[in-house]
Length: 214
Image (cartoon, rainbow, N blue to C red; front, side, top):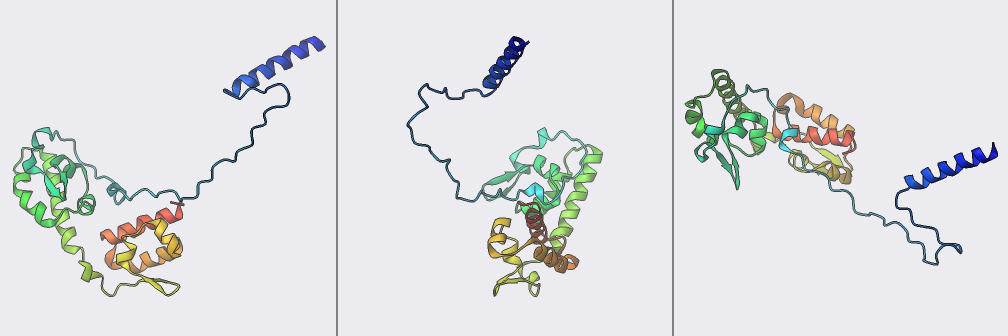
């Protein structure tokens, strides 16, 4: 019986050693004289990922459409060195358009050519409605002057207005001493007149990141 137990213990020990993978062998004579090294300590804070366009609004439900034949440059809209082709416009929502820097004038210039394309009927109707919604959104979106008189957040005599709050991330909010509860109160103050703006949505995303620990 003792011999049987010894065999079981030996087998268990062998399995344990095998599970350890590439464990360093133990030398006879009490180990090594090499000094112990401490694990490196990371002192730099992790880099917060940028807020992506798609985080501002859930993608819209658009009918399937084969846009391959409409991907010519003549249908693309350029913002800086980025090109947004017809497929991108079709698949992204109007908040994504605005966040990408696309203007009302750019869409207006292309509208006639877009609506003359041989889209499937249901796809054309949805895309036409999207263009109309974008036009209304851009008409309603206030300019920088349109935010005059809006509240700001004050922390230790430092004032943070909507311009600052809508261009900084959660890490910078925390460094400034601005917490999620304060941001929620600020959003409540903006909600009635500015809920549809890019600035409001940016601040809302930052607030959610503060709540969820980035």
